Length: 357
Image (cartoon, rainbow, N blue to C red):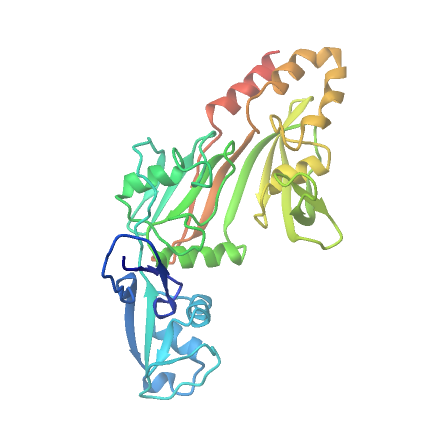
């Protein structure tokens, strides 16, 4: 019985691993480095780029890529000069030098395509903007491989999505919680993925949410640090002592319903459960948020006048949160685009009933 050798891809093709698996039916297999997963670009330094930094020169000559994206390619050892790997972004180039850049191609996902209806707001060759419904998980995860937005997108695009992240989440640049509805931008190729990821990293994406919260908060900016909860690992914890990741949310009161309010939340950063945690921390938790608001709402049931409203709000089946504005620089056109999708029917009806009762 011979051994089988399996090729395990790596960020850079020539760093891939070949591992040996014994006790498998004879297959005489030699797997070569899979360069088909990479697009190769050959760049010759011209006179105008002579003595420039390598990252500056490549940014100029590879027009589609930003300087920070070039740095990522350098750090991932995707740039060579005459078969020598170059990782130093500050390297001073010389006229006539030739560089080879390996850029990852889209890799077909192993997840199953599923014909699930999608509410697509915009689509072109580079991106899709979709309105995710509440109850839909954004991407597959252990124990939940089916019926996600990614499964639907794989079917819709015929498995033509970006594959630029390490978590096997094709097309996904950012996410929304399962029970949060609203706008997401999806990358259809790796160039768009890198470009948009840069914008998220630099906090230049415009993201606004509608939320229905208990009570009536004042207009304010909530700042602090978010880290994983020490006891309940499904939750995040808020602190102001610098532990964790910095977060900032701008709160704007839109309408006062006495027992609850409609607010607009503008994200300056985008951390896990940020709005839910911020509002809970100032004691105005989101209506329907069982994770962060369950133990903070009983005081609203003490007002006999609003008791029917209290029961109505308490029984809302999800956190009342909707991502209604998403704006960014289009990866290819380089023009600012902004998309809006108003509140879904369940949140609108909730507020209608609050007024009625």
